[in-house]
Image 1 (cartoon, rainbow, N blue to C red):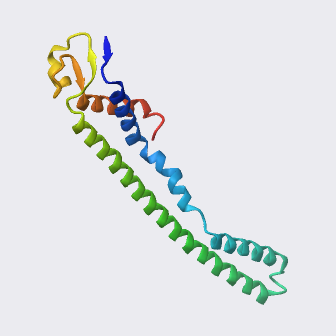
Image 2: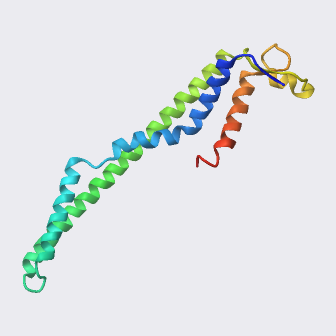
Length: 169
């Protein structure tokens, strides 16, 4: 029923179509490396925890001035942490967006160049005759009952998206 003519191109285009679908999942762990809190943020957080523990040991009624002084320090450090966190999240989003855009562009460009380069190469040949669809499936290849690179990329892309839809959000 189906004869593989060019197995390398068959696998190559399936991998490219899969990569184009999986780019967001590949970007997540890479961008997570850039989103880790810095050493400075961790030390500020440790200081906040230490000050809160110290504040719990002080009676608010008996030593209100010391308690308030600690509270102001804690508030200042927490605001600093909040600002640093927002900056880090913004940078992480920028890295994630840029990386995703670059990977999509690279995979798309590779697919486009490959489709143009191998446009006349048939990927698989069908044993039967699909009369009304034959010309469309084989274009621009000259082999009868063949599926061309263009059509193979289209079929692979749609099939992989349908198959991985339950797995990939």
